[in-house]
Length: 611
Image 1 (cartoon, rainbow, N blue to C red):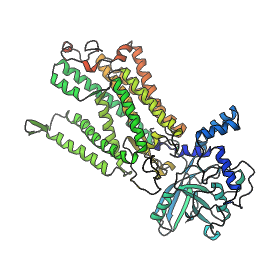
Image 2 (image 1 turned 135 degrees about the horizontal axis):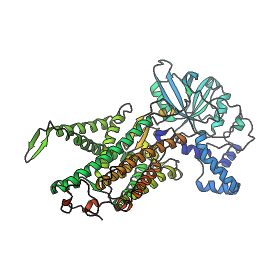
Image 3 (image 1 turned 30 degrees about the vertical axis):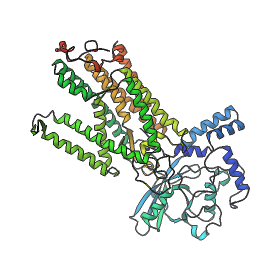
Image 4 (image 1 turned 90 degrees about the horizontal axis):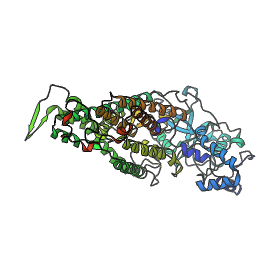
């Protein structure tokens, strides 16, 4: 669920909604511009309704304060409420993705699909490629088509025409194109692709499809397919159920369950070692774990916020830092996970002496294998056809090792961590679209890689041209599973279902704490099982919300309440809430104080240090 790309909703949808709900002042300015001279189009019929939403020099809507002032002047409280409700629903209603299927007339085997955005209230597209009619493509990106004299009729007749965005409305361009005999109008945009908007009441006879397409895609058509190209437009329906979410669900639930189980077994081994008074081994194992106190939790959340904002503004540079860190950390994590399994094998323990130290030969080969796996992923990370498999394997190992290594000392720290990160998740997914200039969610944009068409490949600090000036890198912080059914989102920049590592690791830390608490209190794994089931239920709720809302969901919004409430209810029912809340004080365990517990494999907080 994290965070966008993945879930059948165009990344530009918030911008589309804002454009559709442009301010009254923008509409009045557009009207004055048309009345006052300039490129006045004579072909469209006289406007009887309200002025159209202009798209020219001032096509971007006014600021939030301007909208608020206009609404206060023009309508009462009930009108504001209706406008607000319509504004929230309009992006879901108007935004519609389609596919432009282009193929070379010289060699029909050369073909490629591109994403388009159109307004379904203006016209509809065929639902399948077989129901669409091929049309010859004519590229006129040096024209704006705001006047019928811009282009000769014979050039446009029976063609699919591409013109540039600007200077007049989408509907005006479409009306002129239709009067000149065009069959399809494609409007190329170098400043972002949002939903074509405007009031069609004055253009009831407009019947040709009008769609927006990225200018970068038009350049790619010329480069890839040449000048003799036919195109068809269609919009296949979204599948009722995306089976890739089943794979995501299994990866998440199994990773959390295995990570929690591993952490509990490590706790049991440590307690057994304490009982046998092997202080060196205890010290060694303790150095491999990190205790996450409440103070460290707060610092961690603050640093997470800072890092996310830095990624949003300096994506093009920091993405490589994150890739390097992930490569090293995932290789080490994969080694730790596989080494734990290999050490259980009783044969093949040949050792190699190096000075006073000896190494197991099989572990040396294992280290080489893990390093090679991470290196292969780094080299081929942008190969969407198969590199996602390596990224998921490395990601699973990373999450497992993180859950096993990082220990939450008590339920109080878990509540603080998950509570703060729930607020963090909701804010950066749902609130930030109202704060950013382009109306995008910071979380979704960072997780999926900003601006699929590279209008701003340098992040959001510096405006860049539409040319691809940097590699289209994505952060390796998500599990990726390709969509198993062909649909429009596969072409429009979201061919994968995604789940962020944080939606696995953070709840997994609580599941791990529950299993360690089971080990220490001989609870027959009741906390571990109940928290694991709660996590699975929370994931199901996330997918249900995703299916209903058709937009990216902050998974922690559903996972945190499920897992926290379930764990607290189990502790309350067993009358262990105080012990569960305070934990068992991992930092003050003393093997000497615990030596009397030789016959018991679990030690409670009162027996071993307490708080």
